[in-house]
Image 1 (cartoon, helix red, strand yellow):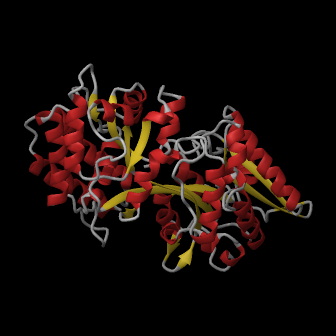
Image 2: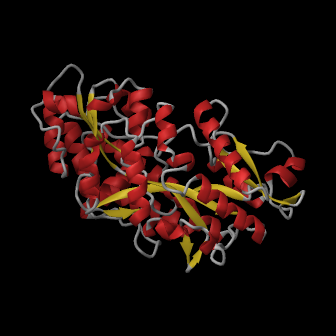
Image 3: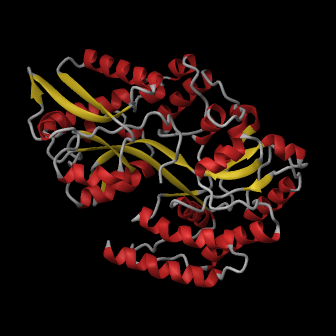
Amino acid sequence: MRSTGFRRTFVALSVCSSLALAATACGSGDDGTASGKTRITVNCEPPKSAKVDRGFFEQDVASFEKQHPDIDVVAHDAFPCQDPKTFDAKLAGGQMEDVFYTYFTDARHVVDIRQAADLTPYIKELKSYDSIQKQLRDIYTVDGKIYGVPRTGYSMGLIYNRKLFQKAGLDPDRPPTTWDEVRADAKKIAALGDGTVGYADYSAQNQGGWHFTAELYSQGGDVVGPDGKKATIDTPEGHAVLQNLHDMRWTDDSMGSKQLLVINDVQQMMGSGKLGMYLSAPDNIPILVKEKGGNYKDLALGPMPGGKGTLIGGDGYMFNTHDTPAQIRAGLKWLDHMFLTPGTGFLGDYARAKKANAPVGLPEPRLFTGAADAKDQQVKKANANVPVENYQAFLDGNHSLQLKIEPPDAQQIYSVLDSAVSAVLTKKDADIDQLLKDASGKIDGILARG
């Protein structure tokens, strides 16, 4: 699933309103030339309701066109950037933009249905490509060919309330790094009373399955075997995930009585100062402050407990299979300008973001390596307006974790796993072995159909 907050207003997707538009402004059926210019359509422009981000995006497109007067960029906006209900239909109907937004989990699928242009012959023209983290580049590489370019990435960690840690007699500079420590700390925080919850987790709307996956990775397990054909959740690691949740809920009473929570519920709890810990990516922090009443100084990040792995996600851009070579070259230049030049562009102009009172200094996304990463971090640090020291444990702990992408057929699998997670959190006598066996069989069926 997508993490829910990195420049959260910057998620938009155009849907054409007529067949005539589909053949021109939205689709890629023409040769991409107009008045001697190479014309590209792109999506994920922030909606007009997100005034600050929309203004930044328009500024950056204008500066790009000024630097490249032979390229005309036509940006499309709507919400969200990618709607799963219309994504495949737009691809199949020839309505997808020339350069289009995708989640990491879409890359293989788009290639499999032959809707992605092969960028391999042109990728050397993307100046930033070699500086992007290899594990992120590899997501868009299929059978040795490059079909897309990553734009952002996130990894899961543990958001916690420093104030509640102190009140419970815990060290706010030393977040838990094992699930046993999470359980012990959650119990102490819940003991504060007054409706305080030690640890919360999602268990509805596929979000429970998403977090089960993250927690399974943290234990060293996996949801699907390496051949992609069989579920691997009915294991000691899978059992440990559900047993831990069951014990915190029913033995320790550290998760509160209200269950079947989704992300907004948990964010409300954390923002109101009534929750000690939950799993998330760094992009949740500004949401907790700006929308849920939280305070930056009270919110901190630790690494994913368990010490073995963490779930990563993110997004990037792919190119329409109908694009001309000129459109591909123009699109790569646009990506470099907008998103992939350290310290500048829509995502990297930290000085501009600071002036607009946007949060600067969160530990992710961390897209680059080497000199590019050093430059990006230097500019970010110089403009930081959040307490970066609160995130150091997350940064330090991430170095030793295996970074793992979501499983294939993720949403269908998450729906199955939701049932297992919700069962252990709502039924004290839930049969964990049977839940895992049943879920495993259903996932095998999903994988067989895929």
